[in-house]
Length: 106
Image (cartoon, rainbow, N blue to C red; front, side):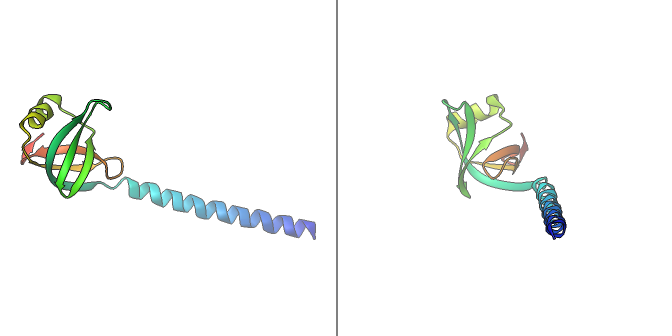
């Protein structure tokens, strides 16, 4: 009787591990998908964190720039102009890799 209970317990445990592994594998495949974004906003700089960010107006949000080009971003920050940025999210929806600004390659 004890052997049957042990065998059933081990079987259930193996089944749960298989299902969990399948879910994890599916999740990692989905996380590799690129989520493209186009947004309008102003460039800002956080001195404490030493990061540039976009204060989005459309859609309203704040995202960190993961590929900062200090020369380009500093000029835009000082001008205060609203720009159109095209790129994709890298880590969730708050880390942006810029590809184009105002239609020009970044």
